[in-house]
Image 1 (cartoon, one colour):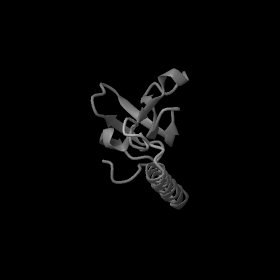
Image 2 (image 1 turned 90 degrees about the vertical axis):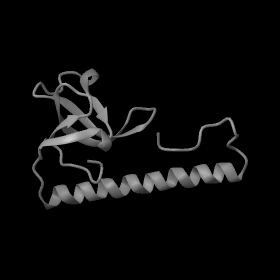
Image 3 (image 1 turned 60 degrees about the vertical axis):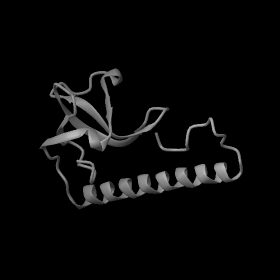
Length: 114
C-alpha cells in the first residue's frame, strides 16, 4: 500500500494494530524522523496528542474506506509527494557531500531520512 498517499479522512488498518485509524495528515516529523502519516484511532478520534499515531505508508495493510478526494485534494497529495521526494534527494546529496568532504566518519550512521 506504499505506492501513493491516500486522502485525509481515509480509514485504514495498520500492520499489527487491533483497531482502525483515520488519516489526519502527511509527512510528520517527530524530531527524530519523518513519518508518512499522522493518524488517530477510529472511531474514538484524537482526544489528546499523546494518542496520535505516526506511521509509514508501508504499514497500511488495508484501506477500509477511502476519504473524499477532489481536484484540490489530488493536487495537495501530488505536491506533498513531490516535496517529500525532493527532501529525500536533498538528504542523500547532503550525506554524499559530507562523505566526500570526510566529515562523515566510518562510525557515523549513513545520512538517511530515518
